[in-house]
Image (tube, rainbow, N blue to C red):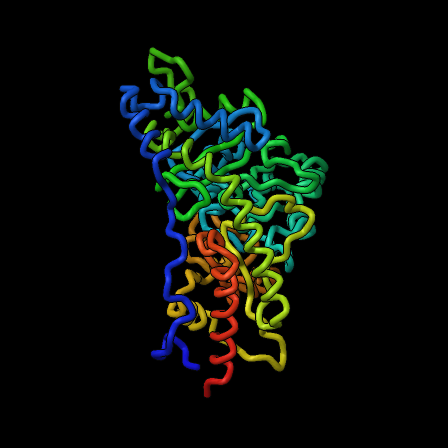
Amino acid sequence: MTLALHGGTPVRQAPYPSWPQFGAAEESALLRSLHQGHWWRMQGNENLNFEKAFAQLHGAHSAFAVANGTVAIEIALQAAGIVAGDEVIVPAFTFISTSMACQRIGATAIPVDVLSDTFCIDPAAVEANIGPRTRAIIPVHMSGHMCDMVRLLSIADRHQLVIIQDAAHAHGARGRADTGIGEYGTLACFSFQNFKLMTAGEGGLVLCPNEELREKVFLYGNCGRPQGDRSYQHTVVGTNARLSEFSAAVLSAQLTRLDFQTQVRQRNAALLFEVLERSDLVTPQARTQDAHTHPYYMFVFTLNTRSGQAKWDRNHVVEALIAEGIPAFRTYQALYRIPSFWQPPAPSEHNLAHYIAACPVSEQVAQHGIWIHHRALLGNEQDTLDIATAITKVLTLLANEP
């Protein structure tokens, strides 16, 4: 047996389901938005209808659709009263948007470690890093697995902190006791970028727990201009984050696919987890009681590099899996290892060496982690088993290379 990377036959020669998925529903939605004759959200109905449906699905009071997930976090922070000089605790293992949104408004992102089983923010690390300038926490529902929101809310309540959920991976996710993201009483931010579980190519949304916060989110996302204003009253320094009616229409159609696709991904992820856990070659992200519904934006695992085991080059493993026909990716870098993280405003009390020592789990996942795109979990049982076969093949053969 030879790796496909070296000229062997790949495990997968048939492609996995394509992404994004679309059809008559999206086509009809685009024509509907076209023919309504109002392509701007301030005149049309597509944004309003999508916001209502999305908020209802997640148990939220309301929502505001925006241009992308990064700006969703940015305006949520502003609506929550976070200002320049404040500190916001974020997981060290996340996409850069989580911290960059803080920097964009002049706040400092303080990275803390994640849990070794779920790769979600560690509540104990959060509490240990609360300081006099801490004003908010941004928990990230990594790959769609819900964070321990019960414990995080308790911490936030004791220290009078704001929580803004980064739910970019978590469309339709539900937490402990079947609790929807919008039922926790916080702002929550979603992304509809092309890779995401629902997409219009780009797009984002802020879930709001009450009308007061919804009005603030709207204000900061609408150039600081209140709803219904006709006299150019820009009451805060906002930005233009409005989503077009065309994108909102596509997202309405995408929303109708979400529940079924989530069920398929959960079924296939459970099978993949079971097979990989037996192999002892990798450690998949665990699924705890905090993930009543886990939509699996990605299937994440780390290479087992314990003493006495093979020391694989993670990046080489990813290339080998791609050659075998698997849509594999390396995991995110730890935030503090990204150059732009250290551009002002950046943490001043600690340096890179401190965060490397303080975040051992983030280091492990960032350096030895791999994720499989969710489209690979939309196939049948054999499609799923092929992922496990490819992982086993690649790791076994690479371990035996001189």
